[in-house]
Amino acid sequence: MSDETRPQRTAAVIPAAGRGVRLGPGAPKALRALGGTPMLIHAVRAMARSRAVRLVVVVAPPDGTAEVRRLLDEHPLPDRTELLVVPGGDTRQESVAAGLAALPDDITCVLVHDAARPLVPVDTVDAVVEAVRDGAPAVVPALPLADTVKEVEPGRPGEPEPVVATPERARLRAVQTPQGFDLATLRRAHEAVAVSGEGATDDAGMVERLGTTVVVVPGHEEAFKVTRPLDLVLAEAVLARRRATDAY
Ligand SMILES: Nc1ccn([C@@H]2O[C@H](COP(=O)(O)OP(=O)(O)OP(=O)(O)O)[C@@H](O)[C@H]2O)c(=O)n1
Ligand SMILES: C[C@](O)(CO)[C@H](O)COP(=O)(O)O
Image 1: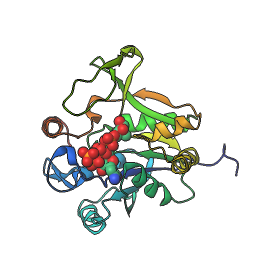
Image 2 (image 1 turned 120 degrees about the horizontal axis):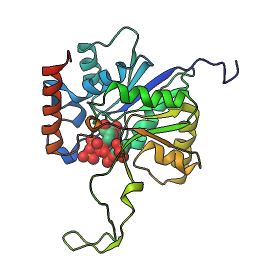
Image 3 (image 1 turned 90 degrees about the vertical axis):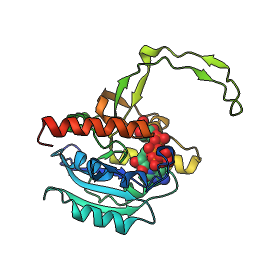
Image 4 (image 1 turned 135 degrees about the vertical axis):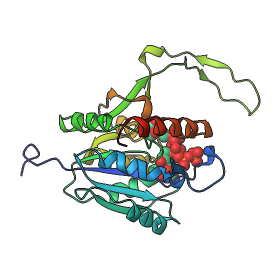
């Protein structure tokens, strides 16, 4: 079958193996509660809400795969969604690579979605999938910035850092997840980064280094990343509002 006639089958990889150091002491971040339900379960449901997503691969803390499997069993997904759990690595990049390695050969489109972005709306997920299915090899949801951004010369902790540049804000975007890819392209990008040894903070950044074009679709304010304690306060408020207004 040629690539053009091959049906598109989409999977989501959810890196959830981080400790959540910036959120403060406690369980691994993905397992902490949001509205009484682990953040990871919200993120898995957010992917499964998209009718395009047939398989979700959860990348669990290496010492927590059994606990993650148990939590997922307690929170079943729609019948159309298959689920796999694999152990993660020391960095986000290694965890995503472990998730990609678990994908079966018939997957052509992959979403990579942070467990730490539990509230991404399904319309954002669908917009990313659609752009990949329309032929873009790499797609990121993103929003314009509210703050002006300065590039600095990092100094010693506690010392003022000299500003070296002010990039033009209108050309900058804050990038979210899910990021969507043609699977073969993302696998090539991960292999190249592993060989070069240069890490990247997101998957699209690795694809850019191949010289492949990455395109942006509109992100969503509620797809923010729960990173620090105040983010959790905001996430609780957003979830409470959804529960009061939608059948959520
Ligand atoms: N070794 C790692 C590190 C991060 N992640 C995942 O990557 C996503 C984005 O990372 P981040 O928000 O930085 O999570 P943490 O690494 O847990 O946070 P921190 O840096 O504060 O420890 C999260 O869903 C996190 O679980 C992962 O799967 N494996
Ligand atoms: C992938 C990401 O969420 C895009 O904004 C971000 O780069 C993850 O960064 P983190 O420091 O691993 O949370």
